[in-house]
Length: 346
Ligand code: G3P
Ligand code: MG
Figure 1 (tube, rainbow, N blue to C red):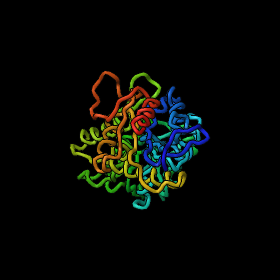
Figure 2: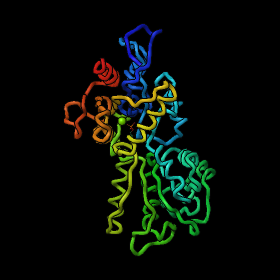
Figure 3: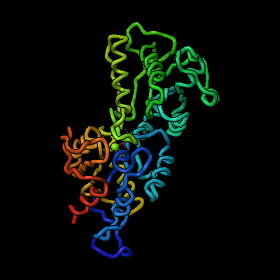
């Protein structure tokens, strides 16, 4: 489809290029849209000097809710409709692990939300830290469950159950408690609580939905995130057992996340715009050099130079410093990023 300038009524969808957006620090900060975000979305939807619409998807490391719920929230914040068909969060690719394990521990997020998400992905038997504390309150000496946690937790005899894998879906709301329970499992015999391995190499694997040490939210300065919990857990395992533990992280900058995003974008362009060929360029707009820019650049090397990294100054990256991973372009904000991509195309 040829993209020619025109009035909004004549707006056509370009098949030449597309955008992918990080969320925290690019579009949203602390639950509020970044000032230029709404205008940037309007520009993609035809409010631009070229009279075109540009397909786009969202790729966030965040999570803690179902994709459906996150999209409803994002639609309100950005004043447009966002569909799960154009959305990936940190834990979305974990869906593909549901068949592999029977009983799993799911950590992080508000209340029982992440259990719901995991069950929605098809995980068969999902345990939360609350379940374990309900079964044995001595697990975490300084943590009492509140009445709603007691009501929603599912006690069982954990002495008889093998937890086969640990998934950290979203940020922990109680590091001490969650780390104690993860550590207990890592040091156990085959994921059986209450046991201690002699070799410390028979505990379940641990998967994190991403590895961001810091992220950008309502505070002026960055806040520690899930990557910090990962570092902390690894150090603690070493301090207690003298051994190294290998953990796995999903999310950006993992190549797998960008491959997943490529498939999603392809499907989205096909289903909503009837475009069958891949785009010549995907502009990825992010605020975190270590995950967004690093991942986009790495992926670009194997994606025949089709991914183009744009760094914004509204989040983790601080202007005046040299980013650890060099973007193709650095701009002030997401609206400038959209303009940069469009201007480069025409
Ligand atoms: O916890 C979320 C955060 O680490 C990053 O989210 O949208 O910037 O990838 P995002
Ligand atoms: Mg971000």
